[in-house]
Each structure stands twice: as structure tokens, then as C-alpha cells.
Length: 240
Image 1 (cartoon, rainbow, N blue to C red):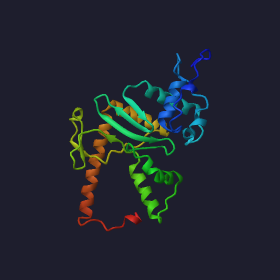
Image 2: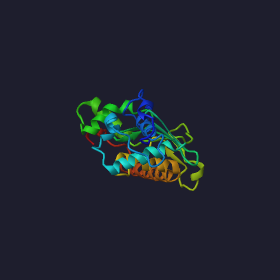
Image 3: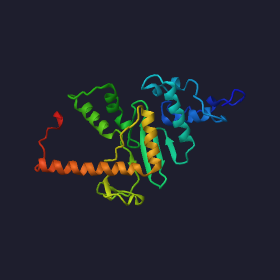
Image 4: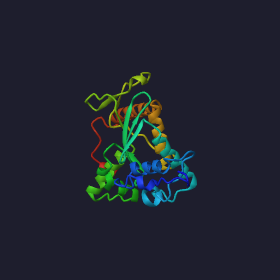
């Protein structure tokens, strides 16, 4: 956007959306920079409109730069789409990945599941365990296990397993547990982490190496578990 332009980006914002949703925030960056002929600029007052952007504290100049690059890369990619807080990524080999992301809770999780885990995510954010309130405790466990999960569009065998894609035929294992598709954050901030993960999803190769190693580790753990407790472990889950 230039000072000489009569274009007012705020008149074109998607105000009908949740102002803390990724779709609104990314569209705000896009509208604010629609007539920019050079580097993208920071949308004025955007963190006051979308308060969840400051969930990790006031943004530094470096963090704003990460945000700008993140928004620009999404807007310029035909392989990324966002509906409210649900991302859909198409990798370069055709793999389809989907997940929900929440700025408020600084997590991603399985697509279309964010609203069902809000109580648990809120408790986790505030450090509230409520171990002796069964409903809250179960909500916390479910939100914790759902965190960092993405959904892959690989072939499903109907028995809880999915196939690794054909372009990863060199992998030792050919299937992975459909539920065990967690990609854990690797950046210093949530936006850095989600940016890194999206790049891996677009690249469509390293992400499968990660999932393959997790499946190897999962099977090894189960084998050791069965050896240690051949008749099943005592029902002590409430005390773990």
C-alpha cells in the first residue's frame, strides 16, 4: 500500500469472520498490501483488532517480520487454503494435509476439532489440571493428545492404518497408525513453528520421514510394553 493510493484496505476486510481467526488475519495482511509494489508492510493496529496475535506477548520487530513473511507466503501460494482456522496444504507430490490452528492457544490439531477442545486447551494454557474433576481432567487429556496432530490424506485401510505415499517407496514400513500423525513444534515461537511445518508439508518428503520414524518408535514402544506387561498393565491411568 502506498501513501498516494486512494485504496482503503480496511473497507475490504472480511469483517464477517472471527477477528482472531487465521483466515481473517491473513486476509487482513493481503488487503493491506494489495497495492504494495515492494516489501509487505505491517497492517496498522492489526494486533489490537486481532488480540490473539499477542498471546505470546507484545510482538517485536523480528516477530512482525516473521508474521509478514508467513502471511505473504500463504497468500502467494496456490497450494495453501484457509477456512476460518482450518488449513489445507497440497504438497508438491500431491499429498493433502489438513489441520486446525489456534493463535489463542498456540497449537495446531486435527481439522475441525478446535471447538471441541476449547475447554481442555484453555485449561492447558492456564496450567489448570483439575485432576479431581473428572470432566475437566478428561478434557485436558483429550486436548493434550489432540495437540500437534495433523490429518494426512493417504489411503486408509479401514483398520486404523494409512499407507505411506508412492513417492516415499524407499521407506522401510509401508503403513502408519492413522491417529499417530503428530508433528511437534520446532521453532522459537508458534508462528515460526507453524511456518516450518507448512514448508515441510509443501515439500512433501521430510514430513513423511518424520512420520515414518514416529511409527518405528511407536511399534518399538508397543513391543517393549507387551514384553513388560504381557497380561496388560494395572488400571492406574488416573495416577500417571
